[in-house]
Amino acid sequence: MKLYTFVSLIVFFNFSYWGQLNRLSEPKRLPIKINSSAEESAPILSSSGKELFFTRTFDQENQGGVNDQDIWTSIKNEKGEWSQCENVSDFNNELHNGLLSFSNDGKIAYLLNSYGGKTKQLKGIAYSTQDQNGNWKKPDPLELNLNDFESSSFGFSISADQKIIVISAKMKNSGSGLDLFLSEKSSGLWSKPERLTINTTKNEISPFLSENGDTLYFSSNGLEGLGNYDLFYSTRNGGSMNWNNPKNMGNVINSPDFDAYLFRKENQYFWSSNRGSKDADIYFAEEKPVPTLSVNVAKKDISKFNGSDGEIDLTIASGTAPYKFKWSNGGFVEDQFKLRKGLYEVEITDAAGQRLTKTIELVEPKPELRTYFRLPEVRFEFDSWNLSSTKDFDSLNLIADLLNKNPGVIIELISHTDSRGDEKSNMKLSENRAKAVYTYLVEKQGIDPRRMIPIGKGETEPVRYIDPSTNQYITLTETYIETFKNTDLNMFEQLHQQNRRLEGRIISFDFNPKTAPAAPKEYLLQPK
Image (cartoon, rainbow, N blue to C red):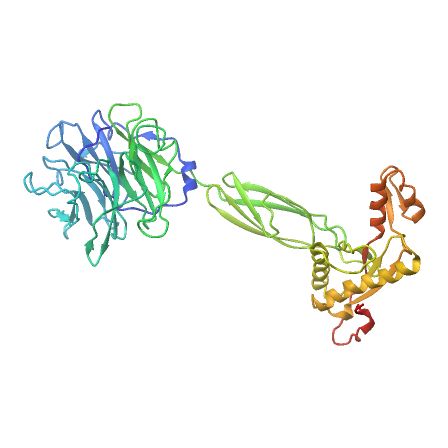
């Protein structure tokens, strides 16, 4: 396609999420009732969507002859078929004409300003309004400050609120090609157009603004694309002059040849392209129906009290892949494993921009009275009951969380040591470790002291352990562990660590803060 004196101003419609570009149907060339051996460009739908207007160049039936460009139109019938196009004589004359857009109510038509005669013609935009009988009045010029621009190859786009115009034009003595400029309306006057930063050293043409003015579409031969001219979009970043880096609209809209003059109404896309031909024709694509995002949820609750074997299994039932997952526990993959009791929320986003939130509750069985359960690991320093590491406090906070979620439970905090050292010292050590945990939960986490009883068992109750070589339970006595001292020092230390543990035992589900007696003061760890 060649660049002729042309103005493309469009009043825009609602534009939705960009994932829809991935769902466009295959591009179709409109029928010969519209496209001809001449050149068709700048398609515009009427506000009703039933009438298509476009510009035709190189047609001998144009009022100015074969080298003129006129406005033509075609009407869609009830079957969705386009009629044989006709020249719109109301707006055409012997100069270059272009019907560029209608206002949203269809009462204002925006046109190339070619109605003052050859000697009085002013470059820019003209507008015509309808009278009460539906007849169009003589067009009047829209007052824009275009004195700094050369007189050929103009393109325009106006926002739906009529407050922003984007202009494609060549500035005098600039040495660059066609650039995009922006003018804003304030107090009834249009500002001097300013050059946008998204321009290249080549040509940016056929601007198109979204309805709310936050997205700009245009064609360029200076950005990396599929061919000669490609269609791009840029989103506004803050003020009207700040625009993000342009992105290519993809290989449904664009081809290895010329693609420009995009127009969209609802789910319909029209644009001009000379793919596979000498002169440009009008092409059409529409959005495919979007499958509603939905998900099926399967869960496995925790098998025992204070366990961590819960699972959540998501299956996407419908939507547009790929999908993103954001879990309340920090996960980003579809399914979750090794979960504790609680509420888990996931936000799912698909490629079409649809979002779905699901909340899943995992429960655990109530423990039987007097049930023992292993508490999160607290690793005291050797022969010490000092709490020091971050991991220790994280573990203790989990115990506090367990008690807060089960407000009727009263537990024993039972500390065990390994068998190294004398029995009396180990008993005292384990008692102080249990009290250290108790003191932290009371003083730092605010747990009612009447809900816990610190107990030290020393080395008296070694743990039962499954021997991986025999798959049999073995009690980790000192005698058994000593057999590894000279053969497998790593196993020797691991087995001792198994005995150094913190356990809980539930002794009541009926804690009542109004009637429970005071906790003994000796439960609190005394300063050394």
